[in-house]
Length: 260
Length: 334
Image 1 (cartoon, rainbow over the protein chains, first blue to last red):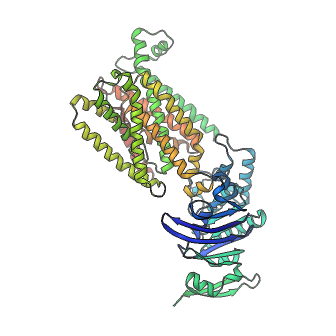
Image 2 (tube, helix red, strand yellow):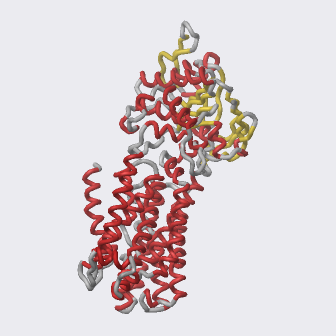
Image 3 (cartoon, rainbow over the protein chains, first blue to last red):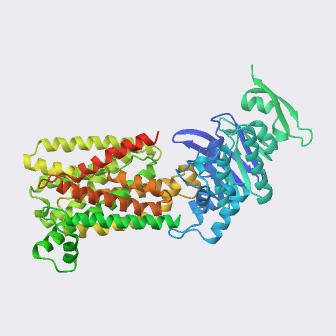
C-alpha cells in the first residue's frame, strides 16, 4: 500500500511546521526520513498516522483519503510506533503484544483463536516469543523495542511507521532492529517508513530517502542518488566525506565537519 | 492467572460478607450473628427488624454503592491521567458536588436528611451532579490546551478544589452553629442520612455507569500505552478521555450527593486492586469497587461506634486509614 501526500500543511496549534509538502512514499519499500532536529520529519510521520490533525491538504492510502477512514479502519491499514510509548506497570510481553489486536476486537469479546495465533506469529517474527511471560519493564532497550515492533505487527497492517526506533540503543542493537525491519519488508512486503537520525543507517537500509529541512522536502530518491556532498551540505550544514560501499554501492559517510 | 483471579474474587467476597455482618451486628444495640440471621429469616423482634432493615442495612448497602462509585471513579481517573494520585476527592469533582449540595441544603431547609421533604431528596443527587459537572467543566476548560494533558488536568483540579473548598468554608462561617456542624459532617463525608429512598435513587445510576465503563474498559488499557500509540491503535483519544471524565465525574457526584465528600477511598481501593491484581481494567475495576466497599463498610462501622453515641464522619476514618498507607507507598516506591 503506497502513501501519497498532497499539499499537506501540518501545524501544532498556530505554529506551522510543514507549510506544504508533496510526497509519494513507494509501496513495499523502506523509506527513511532524515534531517535536523525540528525539521518536521516526525511531524510528517504523525500526520500520516493522524496523531496530529491535518491542517490543509490530504494524505491518500491506496487512493483513499485518510480523512474518510474511521480510526479503527486506519489502525488496520497502518501501524505506528511512536518515539516513546509508555510501558504499563507489570505488563507481560504477550499481553502488550496482544494490544495490537485492539482494532479488530469488539467491545465485550476477548481474543479469538485467530488473535492468539497472530500474536504468537508477531512475537516469533521479532524473536521475543521466548520472553512472552516476562515483564516488559524488566527487558533491555533492544528487547523492548522488538516487543513494540511485535505489537505493531500484530495489527497486521500493510504499512508500518516508526519514529526513531534506534534511538537510545547501542550499535549492535541498532543494527538488529534495522535488519529486523529489512526482513519484515522482504518477507511480508510491508511498506516501512522510518524517521532516523543516523545518516549511514538510512544510506544502508533505505530503498528511498527523504531529506527534510525547515518543513520542506529538500530531496527524495534512492540513497545512491540523493546522498551526496552537496545535499548533505544543505541538509545538515556539514561538509561530509563520502565513500562508496564496494559491494552494494551505497554511499557511506566516513567523516564530517561543520561548514565554515 | 485465571486461577489467581478466582481465588481473589473468593477472598474479596468473604471479606465483604464479614464486614457487612460486623456492620449489622455492632451498634448501640448489639446483636449476635445468629440474631442477624434470624432477623433476615423473618424471625426478628420489632426492635431487631427496625435496627436491621431501617437503620443498619440501608446504611451498609449505601456504603457499598458509594464505595463502588468512588472506587471505579478513582480507577478511571488514575488511568486516564496516568497519575496514581488522581482521585475524585482531590481534583475538585467531589468539592463541586459538595458546594452544590451545601448551597442547596442551607438555602432551602435546616432539617436533617431523613426529615427533608421528598422533593429535596430527589433533587439532591441532581444538584450534586450539576455541581460536580460544573467543576469538571471548569477544570476541563482551564486545563484545555490543544487537547487535554493529564498533568495539566490534575494541577488545575487541585487548584479548583482549593478554590471551591474556600468558598464552602466561607459559606460555613456565615452559618448558625447547628447548620455549621451538619455541613461539616457532610463535607467530611458521612453516611449519616442513609435511607432506602437514596438507595433506590442512586443504585441504578451508579451500576448503570459502572457497566458502561466496564464495557469500554479495554480502551483504558490501550490509553495506558500513551496517547500516540493509542491513536495508532484506533482510539479517538480526546473523545474517549471526555467519555471517561464525564462518567467518572457522574459516579463521584452521585456518591458525594448521598455520602458527602469521602476522600481517599477512591485512592485506596483502586491502588490496592492494582497492587494485588495488576492486569487489565476489566478484572481490576470490579476489585477496585469490592475493596473500596470493604474499606468503607469497615470504616463506617468504626466511625459509628468508636465514640458512640457521637458519630464521627466516615471520611475522617478513611483518611486515618489512608495516611499510613500513603506513607507506606512513599517508602516502598523510591
